[in-house]
Amino acid sequence: MNITWFGQSCFQIITAKGKDSSVKIVIDPFQNDIGLNMPKLESDILLLTNKNCDVSKIKTRDYFLIDEPGEYDIKDVFIQGISIEADEKEKEEGKKEAANIYIIEAEGIRVCHLGSIKGKELKNGQLEKIGNVDILMVAVGEDAQASSKIVSQIEPRIVIPMSYYIPKLKVKLKKVDDFLKVMGGKSAEPQNKLSIKRKDLPKEGREIMILKT
Image (cartoon, rainbow, N blue to C red; front, side):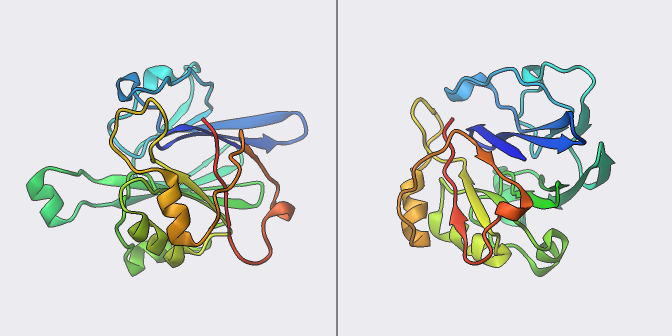
């Protein structure tokens, strides 16, 4: 499995399907007005966690679109969409609509993308649906302390921070260093992508993986 980050909550996951083929999954392609350049990507499966995505950034025309809760089994990839409703205060203030969390299972690895959740503890029912997680993608640029609590709730083996400040981004967010300090970790050397197999997952403890854009 190869995981590449493009900024904000946008990732491309490429999983092996048999010996000579693969499945490309794209999550949350963003609009260029946020200051970052969103390249056009090939995708077999497109996941949208919110309504602010730009599907014109997908090259492939016959991708399978998932933008609502449910269970999906596509090309040897199992995906579960879990709805996270805005609370009453958020609805009144018009700050947030319902959003989705996605669980992606492929190659014996469970990946959880937390979408636009920013610093809100998960409820027991949501945690039960999420279950065991190997790799967690979590937004950390608004409230590092709250994001760290969510990580502690889910207890993944690998954490990939997302939705934090990077150069040229027009959205006002904090740097990933704040999250690393709260987690008690050192500033890790950023990697171009995460290439991993099930046997490579940490047996003990937790790793924080910083990806370049």
